[in-house]
Image 1: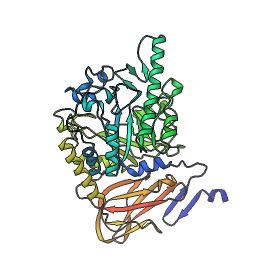
Image 2: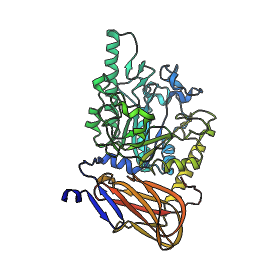
Image 3: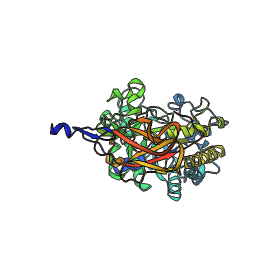
Length: 466
């Protein structure tokens, strides 16, 4: 009988279950900082921005750019880029150092296909250095995106140098692997602490013949968020490039890596596991939601193209994206696209500012907030209409809430207005407007004592129930 009561706790508010026999995964300091950041951006910039053609992923991965000296931005200003991201509310920014062309946006000593080869700035340009400096100036954490899976210039596809299998191919593969490892060492040692290092499509696994990058990152950037290879993932792709995740979205996950070749269940049912996580998973792998800002009207543009302003997401779409990413326990990363002048286009800058202002207006001044003591209940200053609440756990202690209900005190009685499961770092719950004098959160199933640090009430008149 004693064992039963150690698992079941009855409260006046309802039945509350404490799950036993489960080891709660916890975030590292890097994972915790990344989740609490909630919003970041990634700047995509590469040679083909300047070719005047519509980007085509298939051809771009296999066709070298005929003349790399087309890269000659006339007004490049990374301060302007980062300021636009800050205005949107981003807390970190990532730069694509290399993408599918293989061209590197810095002064590499191991990769000749880099800024040293350009006529622009007499081969002295270093956009990575400029970018990191701008991030530190504006208070954003800098991160780098390193694309090694494809390299059209060197004929690399899915980490493999293409060609007839012989000793020449084997030697070129070894050269490519050592070059990549050299680049990662340069990038990890030249620019100070990095918030995130993102390998495009993962970085495979040295056991499968890929470059050994994890050991380098662990040696020189031990506090970064590593995303990812076959050995380790500090975060997971959220299953789409819509900037949203499904609900529930748990931070816990059953596998230590996102390598679908090794863990095929991740890709099943249209990446359902990536979208939702697993409440009983033994690894902490929070979800990323990514989308290009220019992803509207049937477009999906990570790189700048002329005449594409109509594809910038409307403000209403971006707000919903935020609520279905950061508001579902995921970190949102928006893709931004500097143009041929080396500037963020004015319409994009304007929309980012509108987005940041709207989120600050919407969630910056709640009607009432939980004080962190006693019952998770907030009394409103008067009877007011409420249609949203924000719930947040201290995820440094893990995800302890397994299910909950939100209740409104209306006409002197408590009325349930919402029921959910995962709360995590942040959950934004939307429901039909209700006149209330108080709101409360009632946890109905838990793993250890809940550590709720945010419970806010809001009314937003421009939204509809979800």
